[in-house]
Image 1 (cartoon, rainbow, N blue to C red):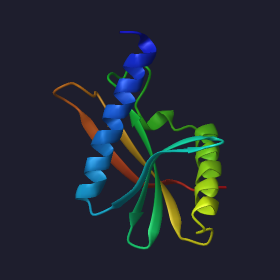
Image 2 (image 1 turned 135 degrees about the vertical axis):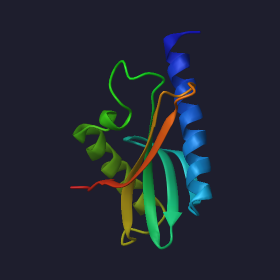
Image 3 (image 1 turned 90 degrees about the horizontal axis):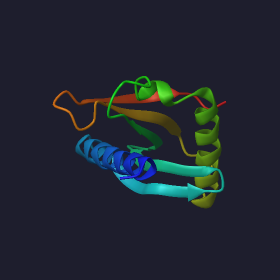
Image 4 (image 1 turned 60 degrees about the vertical axis):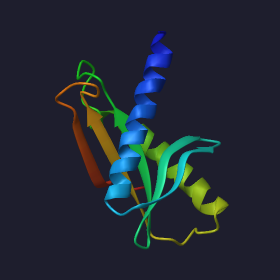
Length: 124
């Protein structure tokens, strides 16, 4: 298996796990892999009246750091731009929203760790 395909499979599995966890927490899943001109939003969900833009990061090992650490300030700015694109597309520019991260470490091992970080960062 090529490295790129391995990475895509890890990402897809992580998104499946995150979607299931959010659904069990009562979130309504509105979109998965929503494409914008700036990139892709992993999950768009609704938590009560709040729209939630969820970045999913999955790692099979901690060789390159933890999953949550990979949501850099650059990535946060891109997510904010993607969220604005989504809000304009659905006509909800004034909707309350937040950015969550679902970090999955040691995916595929007996010691998998799943953390849902609500309001992980603020959009500037």
